[in-house]
Image (cartoon, rainbow, N blue to C red; front, top):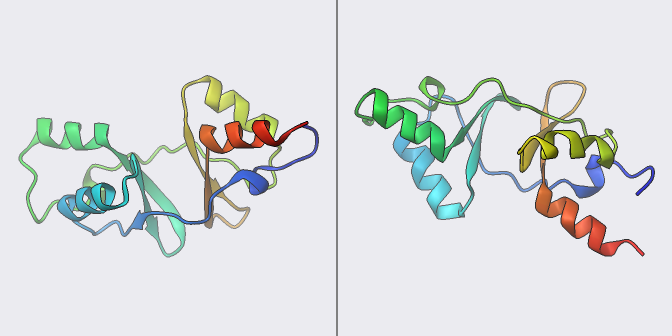
Length: 127
């Protein structure tokens, strides 16, 4: 696979919401777009990530309502990767069960998302 970088694999069509968006808005956006996680972005920077598991935790802790912001239940410790990291560097977190990683540049700006499906497509193109 050689010198190829994450930038070659990543998708730049991202599903995002603001930290002050409601839990209901986040859930609707995820369902409408068919994604399994939604990126919480504040001024171009990754603030957190919401998955179905985060919704489960929200419901267990309290009844969500229109006032519950994404920032109240999002995961804030998000594993990320840089666009200039090698494709091989994605293998380590993927080996630990991460199927998607946000791609963040050196300025902390969210620039993409890379997935194990992207990696599979890349491998299928190799000859």
